[in-house]
Length: 368
Image 1 (cartoon, helix red, strand yellow):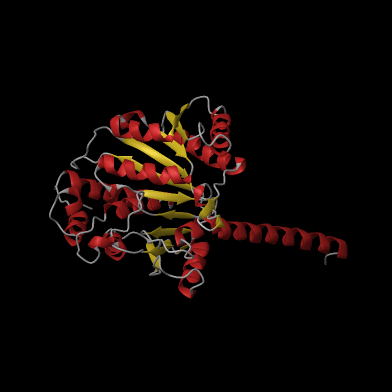
Image 2: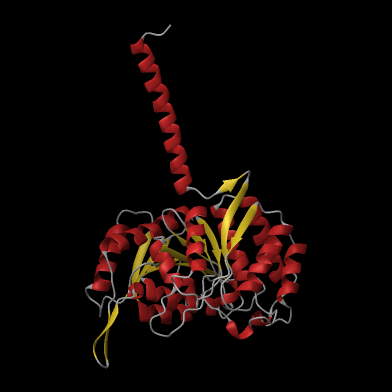
């Protein structure tokens, strides 16, 4: 029979082990994507415009490839009010699942309607937007040998939403740049270059005019660059960047920039390689990751016509699968999309073809 002291000691040891195990479970639950019985649960928001059609293509391809992913779908619109029950349920799903796949939500221009995209990135602190612009064999483009990555700070800059009318006819819009968030996005960019075997990071800014705000961004990025002696870096004023992109895009490798510049540069990048239909993208935070087309176009003008190009959402889903470490499925789907475009020559109208979204999806499935 145990003496009281020995019993207390054993109880404390067992309690400590249980406490440690419970804490590790809590940490895993808080940080990792949700996986039950080998199947990952992913929040799906198809978006406006062609979103339902491209999301249906992804789901069809995933079913054919037997990808172990189950979607929780929320048919949100950019017109959905911020306090709407469906919007709150979608945010709760993202918090729970940690991973989302999303089409593009339209943001109304009218005053008083906040953007779900901006609210989501701020609320979940999804601070790094990544868009990969590269040539795809078989797709006509203005330039060859294009392969660069745009890394955009997602949570501040001109998208801070701090505007007010100080006097009738006079509006002040505040641009917020902070050292901690600039350090974070700069480290993300240099870490990305290091992990992916890239050689150079270009810091994009307008510090010659916005000497305090963009000056802080530039100087902070330069300071972080010194921590990565094996990665080259340079800096470029944003208007010169636009000109250099359309004249010699091959000089760029990884680019890091504040929010608004990233929005503009990603659209230029899409134009260089064949259009927004083939640019994948992702948004990363410490806990959450949301994958969406890298060039954010709703394409409402072709909604419901079965002519949308699903490649950008399919390739974004490939990035998502790599994030979930489902690399075999990612390679399979990426290879099928590339073969459909480059070997079979199946193209939707945006790429100069005549095939439908359904035709393209069936061709990808044949090539799995």
